[in-house]
Image (cartoon, rainbow, N blue to C red):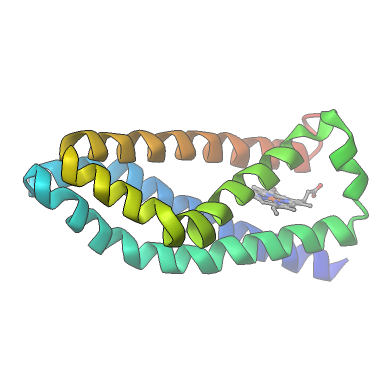
Length: 157
Ligand code: HEM
């Protein structure tokens, strides 16, 4: 049983680092940038700050996934994915899959370049899009954190 508890602690630590970072970016850094730079300078400033977090987030997202799948295996909980009552398990995997896809596939392959092209045409619109995208991801992530704690402690079934 101890290994499951250790995996749970690592899972929560990874989620704290990752979603905590998304919270700081969304609620503190993104709102501050328009006061620090003219429209054309906002995206480069944001990329310079957020780039450091993205590389750290790749590690915490990976750790959250590994510990999550490990717990699912050790708890013998794969059948939860066939049960809509365990929607909070689906929500965790969905949030994880979205961030994994963004950090490891979309950002390096095309998202970065697409946002830059958009910012060249319309820097204010591109920055607004980045703020809305972060706010949406943060909202879904925080709802998932809350639901996962309630679900893991038997309050959603
Ligand atoms: C591959 C993705 C993931 C898998 C397979 C996974 C799996 C699990 C499992 C099996 C548990 C333990 C459930 C139980 O004790 O009944 C758990 C707990 C938890 N997970 Fe995930 N998870 C994943 C991603 C995430 C993400 C993205 C978040 C946050 C947005 C998250 C937040 C939590 C939280 C807060 C708990 C509750 C810890 C506790 O109070 O004991 N997980 N996860």
